[in-house]
Amino acid sequence: MRFPPLAGRASLLALAACLATSVGPAQAAYIVTFSQAGPDVIANGGGTIDLSGLTFITPGFTVPEVAPTFATEATGAAGGVDEYDGASGPLSFGPGVFTSATTGTGDLVGIQVLNGGPGFVFVPTGYVSGAPLSDTATYAGQTFATLGLTPGVYVYNFGSGPDADTFTVRVAVPEPTSLALLAAAVPLGFLARRRKAA
Image 1 (tube, rainbow, N blue to C red):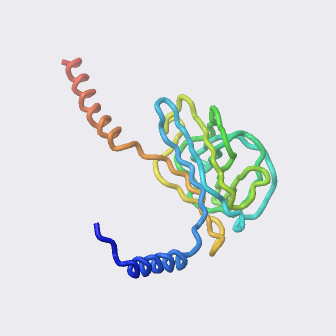
Image 2: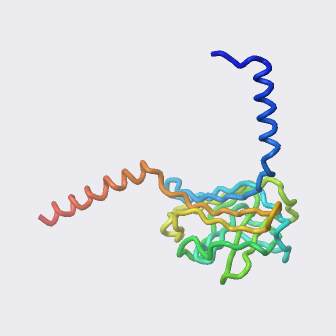
Image 3: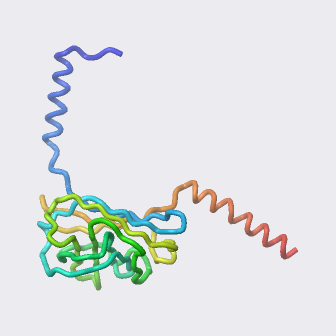
């Protein structure tokens, strides 16, 4: 493999440095992903939240839970939270009502948007804006159907300009291999039913 002459490499490095500094600051974001893991649904969250575009309301206490029809989701260990308002986004991410998680670990983080009003963002008590967040919640013996979760990506926005941020709820679509196995199983089920009828 041939490398450009030393002067050429220096030019490429200078160009890369210019491009890196010309890009604006990276937007902070928190994402929680629901996925089916065997007989359970697992919610894994992580990222950061910029509180600059939100208004502090009150401290409180909550538990890890999900209520898709009320655009409500909280992941992490039960405990104290600081509640902020100012988020907006989808009014639901499925038809399910309140279900508490079996277990939760890590930072307690959540979102709630009721009746089209300003949405609420929950963060651990004393959370410092922009600090890393990591959490999980397990819904043992549950499926997307029993929790009333509709697969898709639901983005909640708050703040503007340099303070713009997002809170994303992602309900993972089953992997293509799982869909292929399901598609193959359905005709076999109909075939077995026909044979029984005959």
